View 1 (spheres, rainbow, N blue to C red):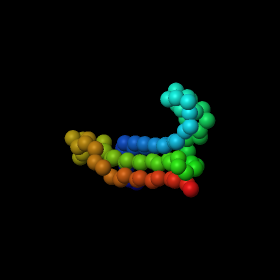
View 2: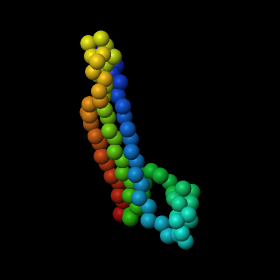
View 3: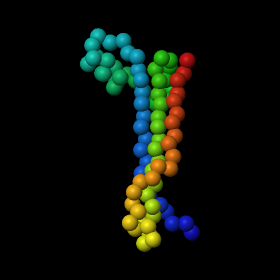
View 4: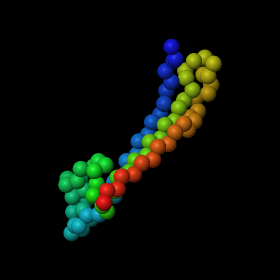
Length: 82
């Protein structure tokens, strides 16, 4: 059976909202309270994400000194509905 390896996975989500508000504080409140933060956005609002997967060598004796990260995959995706 294959031994499990350790991976560092970072998911970055980004939302861009165009909000009508009286001031910065009001715009922030609207973004926090009135919007659902998911991929279902209406133009001109957008949602995108980036997934980075970095692997470590396994913890076996053969690779015990090789703990550095190596980049295995980066996945970018953007949703924009019109």
